[in-house]
Length: 245
Image 1 (cartoon, rainbow, N blue to C red):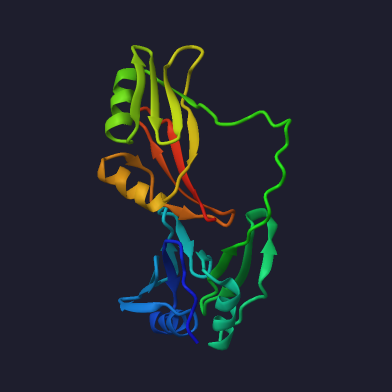
Image 2 (image 1 turned 30 degrees about the horizontal axis):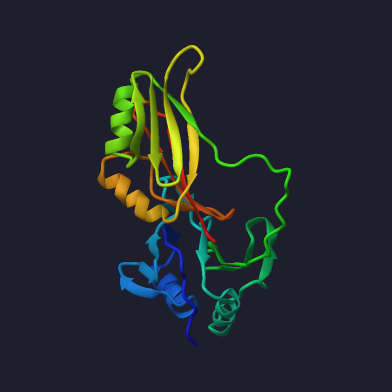
């Protein structure tokens, strides 16, 4: 029985006790392709199986064997569950998880690592409330050297200069605008903001190639976002998050 496609990227290292046993499970039950040396591939998903008591997640944090949680988006979650069950897996029933707007089932590999297979479900749009007021946000990030910040956001982070003066930079990229403001008694410390993006992995590759201070690879979260963090020249944090649906 052919497996439905996995449609979102994932790159994780998973600790196992026996690579050959784990490879057989990921290949024969879950439908991955074995590339050798414990590397398993299914569409954009890459899982590296390593022998040992621990492995490391995409942020470099140690994860003991059996503690990994892998979130995989599939084109047809019901068909995927049927295929996994037919090939000897023990998947849970598909459940509708409203808080992430996805249908999900779970299966465990021979080492106890958890795999969630999910597919977005679509609900009708709610009627727009005429009392709603808020639209876009305009974050302001403090900098001691605004001119250097403007150059960094332009040359490294891909923003365009909308307006600039000694103590202010108005920076645009696509549909978002942010302000770079002079650090003063009123604007102290560091700031943080999050942007929704179309393709977190492509943007991660772009910013990494340009020398941005990228803080690890994109990570898929059970709440429906795949994100990564970047620090600017003065440690303001920018999070770039791709919704799964």
